[in-house]
Image (tube, rainbow, N blue to C red; front, top):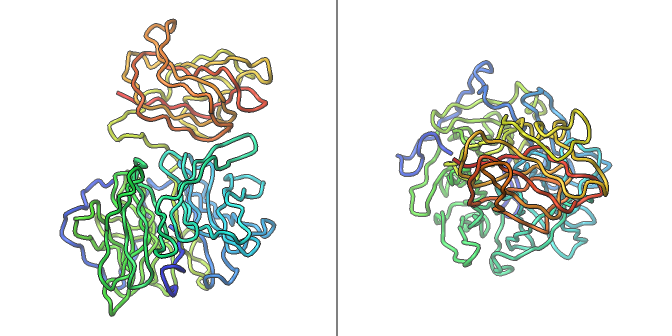
Length: 475
């Protein structure tokens, strides 16, 4: 099911074990066969989100989620939300939220919904027609949202408060609308640049813009070939779709790392069909994508190193053949370090805290590898909480370069401190504008010590301090 133009191709949307840049261009395959169900990659145990509809804009779109660990398929979107055509859902890096686009009050808006919640999604853009907001994507640390607004790429800073997420700032990155339409943004892993599509149909292409300087370069702009929908894997490899030829106009998935690289047409492509909406899985060679091999758009996962592909029919994902399945996005269920050279130092290590709410919500729960709030540390609650801390013993003096905190109830004012003796402390990070909840990634820290602690002096909520997981990265 092909959509008529790039502006309507809103099918949504990330470390290669083998280098892709510079290799000989792979060949697509005519009507490639799917691998047997029994050989489906056992490492894919996370969650997949996607949308399904009969035709774009007909009101039939709904968002679905498949949990590979629990073997459950769930329709996420509900009629009670009052959102027409919810689509293009993307997980936050910690897997606690999805962000998506949908229509309310005859206007497209960006929404965030807490995974598993009975609450309605939060409208982040609140347009009633003044703006059209589409194509949302999270930054790798979850602190930013990039989306299209009226033909420009916007960068919004997300703050998690006791009332839920909100934008604390929104900055126009491209500033070229209406003369040039920029869409489908995706940030680089280090958040220094953003990739996006411009133009429509055969006049479209992908550009890369450095956020700090607004320097824009052509990433892939082949003449006469629709080129769109960049998605960036954690190692910087860009996956995207473009026509295989001006006459054939069949969507094929390509990869590049640098603008000067020769595009690689992946061998997971069906030469005779359309293949689009690539969703690469960080730290693997797998990519989820949509393909028309069996008629309308159905969901597959492919191995870009071997060309093997698996149909997701065995999971019930493709059971309704009357609807196109598009915009897949995968969350692995684990966090990744800010830098590939970093090692997770804290998981499973001894931990202590100034207090615990009860005998089960202890310090050790914040270092058990579980980022969900079913396993967390809670301090005492209310005004009695005051100043509270939680400390992990790394076992030896280590270099500390990053800390991730998955807040259940956050700190407005806190410090990250290190110590060699658990008595004398050095502050390596400090803030007085902390979040009420959610994932905070503190990168580029410079410290060392055997002990690392979060030292909170002012709560961000009416509760105590609560941490689902605290991760210390370094060497």
